[in-house]
Length: 372
Image (cartoon, rainbow, N blue to C red; front, side, top):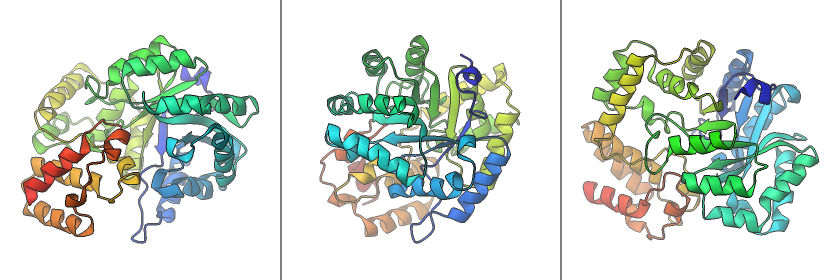
């Protein structure tokens, strides 16, 4: 699939994901840093930005409006936004919400508009509320160029959705070398479904929420000993080898990370056999540790009635398995002072929304027992 022919207005395959922007102590986005990153990204020949209304409590959309849409000619920018399930409850809510997003971003159209985080459960709601039909209508009116989905479920469910709505233009999936054969994420199986249905692919979580650049020291050395670039570079090159992928999202919060990514994408070389064998070894070693597969997407924080800092707890626990450090235990009690795991209601609202399909309440209890 030649993505250049399908989407000639896209420059390069490195997309700027705006879900995890750096925030200041007052919880506002560091717009000065973001503007510097945006300017460097665009000046190096890239132009794809991905957001959703729920990212950073709505601040993500505003950051793109102020630092991208209002600073550069609209026709030079590729903009993707999404419809999340918690922002509509009936058919009549959908179109006004999308139009409000257009207004918020100060634009007349979206290049790509995705039905967000689709799975077998929320897909029923999107169908009942005719969300897809509304998006296709807005496409005909010129307010959306391409309609797609971001997806978090198994290959069977993805195929059902593509059969139900063959008009879908693109599919966004989680894809990286650690999740390639994972039975929960099913990266390879999802890729194969997209290939069969001729759907161009956008990749999210190419670094698995930072996991692939924060490997345990023994595993990290397997990649570093190759002396072929950064841990991130190896992970991106793995994804770039898959020809149906036309866009790879990266959340970039430092100039060094941005420039490293730009170098990887501009000077892309397929992985050789030695590098592929190293990756295979990394996967084998990483799978020996019982790490919690959290990618810090923070969706759980939007639904937790007790505001427990779930991703922070999981990150702390994973760090404790990799590093022996007394500071980790101290950090745990600092978190508990803000929101105690003891307050978990076991309502499982977090588990229902988790893209990684984690059974979160028992994991919270496991962590609590470990430290308390």
